[in-house]
Image (cartoon, rainbow, N blue to C red):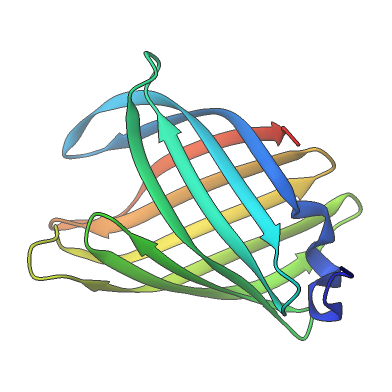
Length: 157
């Protein structure tokens, strides 16, 4: 199956990525984790996305799933569902680099009636060869937009 032409700008992100991350937020203690991202081609003009994290002792921490869409090779739309009761629509420009790409995405968030109040998020992804660097910030539970997570992932498959 050939990759859909709309995805040419992000071909390098296909596969599974794994590595270590750090988390912090004004309302919690700092922590470390292992993260795994998977981007799968399904033959359509989007990639299937899944994310999982584990604590240092191997206990599951977080997961999310969604779809990565590339618009005209210059913009990203990330549609996400989280088991914590949020959905996110993240959008932003896609910048090509010598070894991959970079994107800074700002989200509109919808919260279920029982979810913690998350008003907005920002996600940053930098692909350089076989490394993806990520950062995630959020405005939640009364705190302003604040960095929450950072990770550096290597191609696993």
